[in-house]
Length: 229
Length: 223
Length: 56
Image 1 (spheres, rainbow over the protein chains, first blue to last red):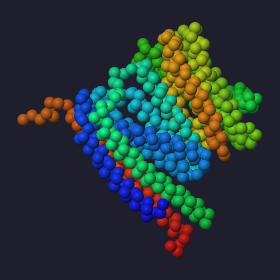
Image 2: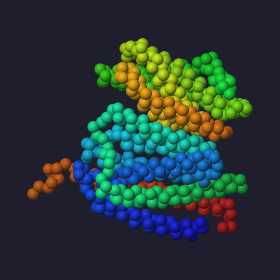
Image 3: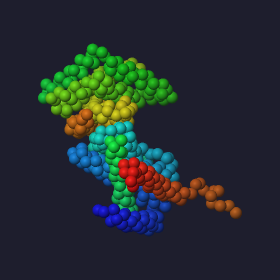
Image 4: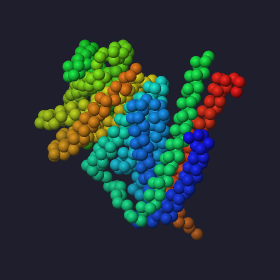
């Protein structure tokens, strides 16, 4: 795709994203019905949950990109994996910040070791560790391999972590349990918000990957400049 | 193939038994952690026995990390890693040998730490020993299965010893959670049927990560 | 006159606001970080290009 077409696509995407986020905001704050016990405060849910879902999708992308890199050794997969991990960390950060803000007025504590929040925390730690691995390896090829290996390990670990924490919480129940079923009237708002976050994910991925491509260009120019001297 | 695994394992065991460097460090550190916990939990003296499973496994995890670091650090220092790689041996075999070696060292350390724990916290556990042994072995194997892979990843980086715990602890959480629960079930004579789930999860973890690490080890050691 | 604020506790709506504000701030900060890094890289690319091809 030539740069001109790419820029046009980015503009269209940006405009679509802005519209989607506005719609999502409307649905979450105004269209969705008021929850019976928690009131308007429950509306945090409409951004908290989609952020979590998108974060998980980001990590899945990281998993497949890491595998692809290990098999094909093409650095563009490494760039994709890095972008996905970074964005996943951002989305999970949203989950970890909005969770306590929701919990404090409802359950009177900032942090509940609930399965969802705890798993989100561990997952967040896993992918921050992924980013740290990249920081601590100098050689670009070694860095990509090390990160890819850890990315695969982290993603395989995730379901086992979730399952272990869920089971542990079953044995040590806490008085605050997360609500299960969702009232059908709330579903349209949730779906719109999930859709908006998907669009956001695509948009962020495009920008982050293009940043990574630029960085690889700089690297290549550097090596050419050093050889020339 | 088993013969090759044995030779890798045998070499590490011999080296260690001769110098006992790693073992001493692991043992000492594990016991120090026990003592630190004793002071840290002073304010809950009456219920400190309930904390024993957690304290035990944290101690195991810390000393195990020490052992894992040493496993590759000494090779790196003496450039033995290159020599090892030049052998016509499948990288996966090296992985299995090293994992077993780490498991053996950790188990030795764990038994000693456990004995100290019995003394420090005044426990009586004669009938429970076979069950405890099962939990210790499976838990340690799982820990070592992932630990060996991540130690190999860490040793080639700038941060080396610092990176391994950063990577290992989040990943190994399921093993720790389930091992602590299983130990708790055994030590506090909860109904033993409850052991089935944690042991299953731990075994699944060990098998999954043992296989995954075996497959990924090739990529990590490319120098 | 007495406002409700004196009698009730913190307004629950302030938590709702805080949550949505947090979402925007985190996203905006990340977008800004990408933008800043991109700008730095573009300057670096220009500098390197000039070094490699002094005629430009």
